Amino acid sequence: MLHTAAYRELGLTGWTYEAIKCDEAGLPDLLRALGPDWAGLSLTMPLKRAVLPLLDRAEPLVDDVGAANTVLLAGGSRTGYNTDVPGMTTALAEAGVRPGGPVLMLGAGATACSALVALRQAGAPAVTVAVRNPDTAGQLLAVGGRCGVRVRLVPFGPGAERQEWLAEHHSQRWGLVLSTVPGSAADEYAGLLAAGQLAADAVFDVLYHPWPTRIAAAAAATGAIVISGFELLLHQAAGQVQLMTGAAAPVEAMRAAGLAALTG
Image (cartoon, rainbow, N blue to C red; front, side, top):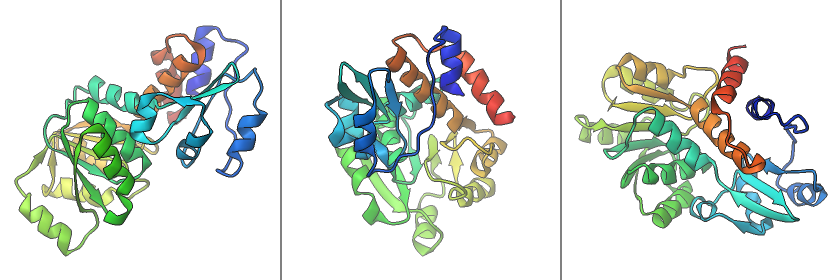
């Protein structure tokens, strides 16, 4: 809906955008089969990482994050880009959030890696990251090392370790809490916000449907700034439209189409 609305607004009547199911094993054959009529691809995980060895070149941001969500196909060449990071920095800026203060991020997966770079670009020198299993945070720690962010890992789920951490930081007010976890995984943090055990000036949940999520609703009830994952979805898509078409993305037309699709 976002890309199609952009093409319609730009008068690109011959352009189409559709979903293709493809796993990691099928990605090389898919790329080889694309002809000169293809402008590019958007990629979701795990293809954002699987595509890296298949690229001819990549922008530096792809190397920083370790993922490309966009591939441009021009002149027989494959060039990787990452629009997740600028999409997130734009969403933060439009909400008036400048994360120079303490930041708590939930999750350490692929979205968290992009978020970490975005937070650094937005001015955060350090990020506290809540993870269920610290052994799975190696990629995130590597990204932090490359972009110059100090990462501190803390326990995510309920238990004595998290209770001890909460007690230690009971008077801590976070400038931003950013949730990158799927589904209802952040619901227990919604409870902490509602109970006053966690305080934040702003909460950014990368989910967007259904909305509001429990953590977003709890944050809104405390008067915090709330940012929806729809803003990330919108702005990363706008970056892709500009890369693929060479024209400035009609963001407001894309926003209207996306919100209409969600409410419908």
